[in-house]
Image (tube, rainbow, N blue to C red; front, side, top):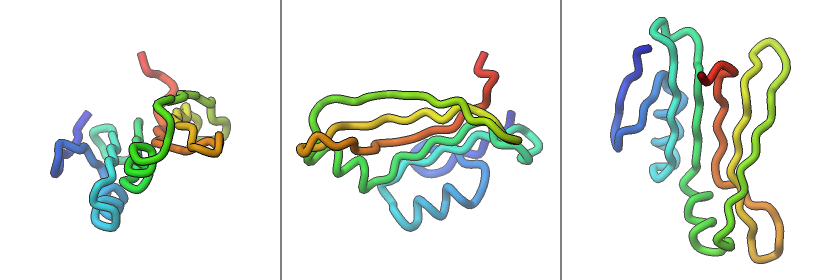
Length: 102
């Protein structure tokens, strides 16, 4: 596995993460790829606006959930959500990982 490290220790494998960081500097984006850089095996994103919104207004509760993705790519979608003052769900971050985590 070959990963490239950029500012703040974030690991990126393509220009998508770099573009997110340019447009929203306080975001955290990690993309892990295999050595050939042709297949992504993990992706994590937490946008800066969501971080600030959760810290400013949401309750101190974080829910975590997963969903198995079907189709040609597969994987598992992991999400972290909070609860805002109106009892609505507030997304904090999400990740997509490969099926074989072990």
